[in-house]
Amino acid sequence: MNVLVVGGAGYIGSHCVRQLVAAGHRPVVLDNFVYGHRGAVAAGVTLHEGSLGDEAFVGRVLRAEKIDVVMHFAAFCYVGESVTDPLKYYFNNVVETLHLLRAMVGAGVNKFVFSSTCATFGVPASLPIHENLPQAPINPYGQSKLDIENALKALAVAHGLNFAVFRYFNAAGASEDGSIGEDHDPETHLIPLAIDVATGRRPHLQLFGTDYPTPDGTCLRDYVHVDDLSRAHIAVFDRLSARGAQLFYNLGTGRPTSNREVIRAVERATGRPVKVVETPRRAGDPPALFADSSLAIRELGWKVRFPDIDSIVATAWRWHSTHPKGYGDRGR
Image 1 (cartoon, rainbow, N blue to C red):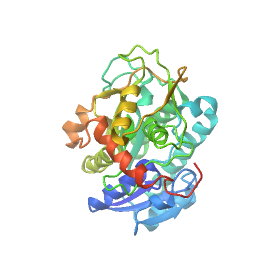
Image 2 (cartoon, rainbow, N blue to C red):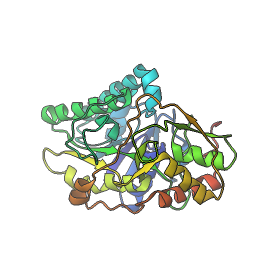
Image 3 (cartoon, rainbow, N blue to C red):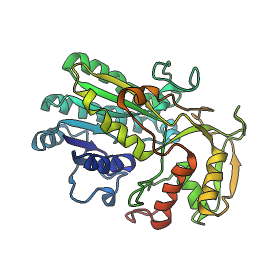
Image 4 (cartoon, rainbow, N blue to C red):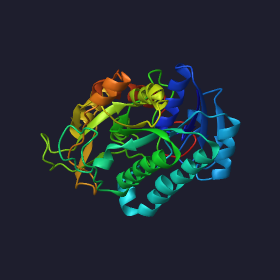
């Protein structure tokens, strides 16, 4: 199929583009390069530079490229920033996405795959988190994703939109061949930050919160490899063709890993110590989040190839050790 990957030059989007090519599909990338990297776009893949909120532009791309499915990865995703600058998140993650969806309706494209988040559950009512738990975000980032989930339900009724929503847990790692990986500015993800400390690019790692009600006092998170996430997005295509498809899936390994365990995994992978400075909790961070992904396994035949933190960190280290300056297109 012809697949428009919005945010296809970003971290998850660029990995998904490569998985689409490997699966025999034709990806087309749309990106504004606010956070994306030109070096992350696979060779030979058609690229359109522009904003997802420009309905006329997006409509032209959809028609010219004969797009069958739209995958949407172009969101701002810093939880802490969403608390201090919520308008930035509502305008980009909600308003701009609604423009994208209206362009799709106008062009007659009715298949949509949405990158959502476990942050829509807030502090979950129970663990592990399954799809039908109450959703009560505790930060604007999670709320912005839930707003679009609700909009998709309305568009399914009004315009026959078929959609799949994937609620990610902590995307991590890099491509197996080390050719693409994480390069954020600013970087807030724990694994690349810890690797930066191990390699001397940062003096220390801030460990936010050591008094959580968890075994070692630090947050528990579910780390899922970025290529495993990408494969799920492609596995859903057949189910998107069913009339009235409204699909929701959690994507994680189901294995909770503490921040301290991640740090130790980075030390094992790099063979170097990671200096830690303990600091108070960040606003908007629940104590524990990990997934029940049995629905995706059962309905999509989804299989996790990187089931533990050491296998995930090994791929991240391969990327960072060979690309110490990331893609080299911005200061870090």
